Picture 1 (cartoon, rainbow, N blue to C red):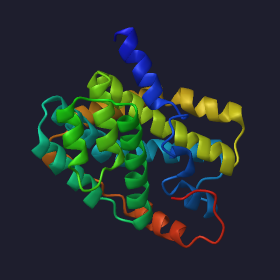
Picture 2: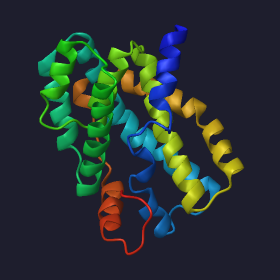
Picture 3: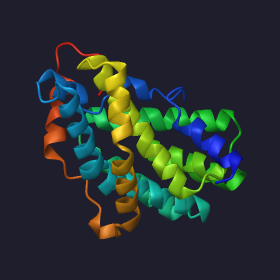
Picture 4: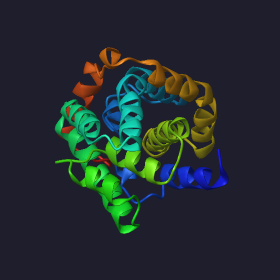
Length: 226
């Protein structure tokens, strides 16, 4: 990868990107509250399962399709995969999360004047912009290759999950870094799987996670918004 693209990727994957990712746990806080996640080993197991059963089978492959659609200036495909992703958010918190973060990233990209008029018009024509759509737009406008952008997205997601565990289980910083270091092969495998899936193989079937998300919506005391 060229140095410029690498630096752009690091910026997109950075936890300092002001889109509010740190304020969401994606159901993990409810799993911690219920005792399902309470150690370093159970935290890693949770992240690995979510990575392979949710991210690699649905969010990541849709992100790849959105990147390709933006590269081709294919407004119909951007609209198709954006609509399908939003429709698949099966709890109010999951839906609010991706719309809020997508809006924030889209506004940031507009403020930074990323993209030509055609790409900006495609982004702004979406009734709602979830995070994968905004992230795909940013990756294409910054000329980050799809394979690298996908790994960056997956790592950013994993890092946020690890940080939620560090703060809430709680785990120490060393334990958090140990989990992240151990996820390298898992992240590569998830990226490979995401690239290989055909359209009819995509699935976000994760009823246990959906139930935890619904429980989080009425959780008495909580730190995160999802």
